[in-house]
Length: 171
Ligand code: GNR
Ligand code: NI
Image (cartoon, rainbow, N blue to C red):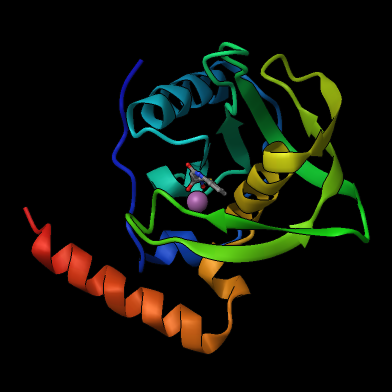
């Protein structure tokens, strides 16, 4: 296991469409495990491979809390098979936009088709925070970040604040 570096925007890998996985093999399972460890360390509730500089269609999530315990989910080649017309707004953050938050509208419920860590096809019905999180992660695989879903006014405000954050947190 290893903790990987998380890319901070703007970065070209965050803007790229990630490549599909042919088969979930040991190399991809290792990537999933390292991403899970990196996500828990951050901490965050989701992480997409492009955020650690790997342009592949892999993501991990865990929206478990103290009551539920851990609920790790690992996906390769996730696709939105269905989305509700009903929309929800969540105050979203992103590990590639440290300390920046904004309300984003997305479908309230989605059905996701994906390959699990054993290369077996699975479906997930998600609502609430899990639906928001999985859509945020799939966006990363398409080179889309949450600020792309805001008005240009709000997006530019966050990009300006992020620039200041990066400056004052320079190593
Ligand atoms: O940790 C995260 N929290 C979060 C909160 C609301 C909506 C989406 C997210 S995902 C984010 C981690 C991240 O950047 N994943 O790509
Ligand atoms: Ni993110």
